[in-house]
Image (tube, rainbow, N blue to C red; front, side, top):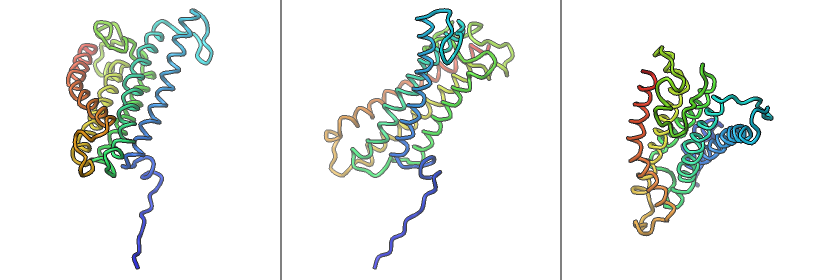
Length: 239
């Protein structure tokens, strides 16, 4: 008679710090939806201001010129880096990629879990920039100098105070998000190459998996210039 035992998982290990790809994919998707709600609220505020200038906005109040720039900037950043990328790449990829190539989980489950929590921390850092002196970054979501550098946005001559400005916190949040996506992209590629089912050749890999892996490769090529530009902008804004 064969006796089987099951390991009981607590709420923390099953739903929060899980290494199961389906749970992590759900976490990415839910976090993306939450950030979409924040970005949508910001869009509501500045578009209401465009439609009815110099009026009190329901659920918000009066919108200043600087707040308008901040809301447009953070809305754009959220929708690209904290909604589009995590939901379409990390969320969808974690949910379906292992199932579509016939494996039980990702190649590096612990790294997969860490990638989500780094992404979560990046979102917290981004939201915290609203509460620092001077407010959040308002130099445009593309962050092009000179609008995003020097004395234009949240400049503080004190170096240590400048490190906790809205500009610095936004750059830190983007850097953490890039690290998270890089960890996830490497996981997708290694899983597809090393853990696909026996007999699944490259031409038999589902096209959705190809889409996820190609997106991960393109992202890896873009990380270097993005990080270099972020560091140069950090030095320029705090010099």
